[in-house]
Length: 200
Image 1 (cartoon, rainbow, N blue to C red):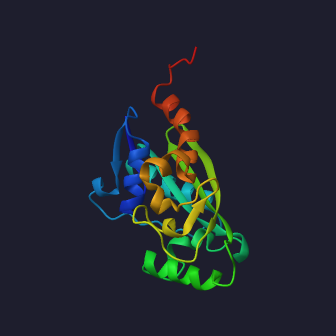
Image 2 (image 1 turned 90 degrees about the vertical axis):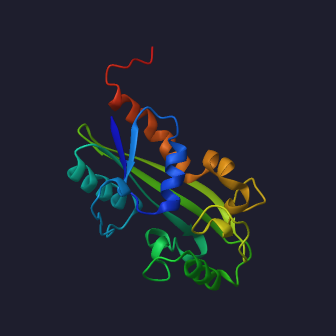
Image 3 (image 1 turned 30 degrees about the horizontal axis):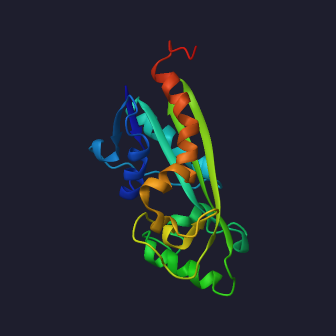
């Protein structure tokens, strides 16, 4: 069975594919569509945007589709940038400009608390399923690390002393908001792929 991943973000796509490595399904991404696929992410929350992306891609392909919408929520900023994380500093999306705007916004706060929030939606012939993952931590005031993407160089997860960008993919993919959400959706997807499967 085919599973489409509804993201055009190459770094996010790579992370999701790594998290699904070994899963018994043929994985395809938007690059395999052969045509443009754009969804206006106009919902007020991550789950709404994820459902919209997964549903529209399912309507186009007829196969199971998985979409992720995620971002950073800073306590001091009342949850911003939130659903606007990717375009916090405007269009087109740019990690460097987003990080600089965030640094300017938190410059007076020592170790501001924050969380990464991920919502995943799975849409297909059997309906729509969703999951969420959250990881708490705090922000630092200078970029640290070279792996990851987005706000990873500024975010230190609780229980660690290094940023996501310093910890690297192996650790991040075990504890991240996206890993949590995907781990919740995997049993649902496996059940849909193998409807006669029994856990007994």
